[in-house]
Length: 362
Image (tube, rainbow, N blue to C red; front, side, top):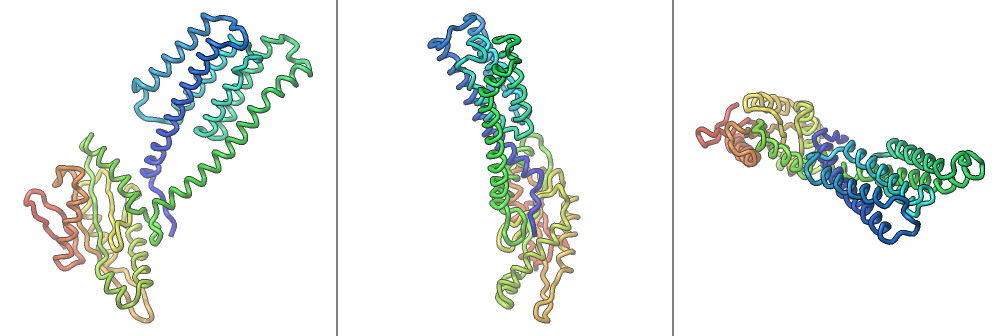
């Protein structure tokens, strides 16, 4: 059984990754400013237009502060990172224009942009940005050498200087792609229950935290189902743990067939599963829970001529009715599950806020 990672979990990972990229991009931006300032005070070649260089550095610094620190974008996106790299190219090109153009000692600053783009944007965007840098470079070459830029000697010399940029773009893009592929595999493995292929508790808690935060901010409803496999210990004792594991896998498969694509199903523990149902109120969840209970009740398999079957007990809790605190929904669902098991198992139970007791129904 293979894991189908929910879009909700993918977006969580993507958001965390983009936050890391954004922090690195901020460091690169300030590094560019610092290097430009150092060159301004300790120039290797004469600065053509001192006033223009000062204005460029001030404008770029202000732009970085406004764009990054004044909540211009509250949510990180790859487009935001791409725009930042385009602004970096503009800043570097302007600085080069005033410090010697293609002969400027600061020409290698383009490497910072190429590496940042390769890591954060992928191969296609990196190639586009390298093409943009090449256009800027050739235009400055034309301004420096005029029509001689088209002569074989001059053009070859310019391309020889530019070839390291192409090499860095190619190698960094390949390495970034391989690293991303390996990271994705490791991420999936770390978020997957080995036996069932479902999400594990760590992955579920990550998604639940986001759902609780959304519920707290916007008061959107959500429901949690806690599901316990009845009699798994007896199956393990009588038939062995291999049979018990097979039973758990069959239950997991049945659960996958019963939940919606928008629901988040995970293995909570040895014989427990949990379902997060976003935008779902108690009434809808009760119907789904009863469907799950009935489906498992009709599930069985043959073990050496003996029919092995099981049932499940289900606990339900919903926000905002009856649970008024979104972070308490999981605990209330667990309380409801305990009542289901106390009441004879193979039952669906919901936490009733108005009575402050757990009410069971079959």
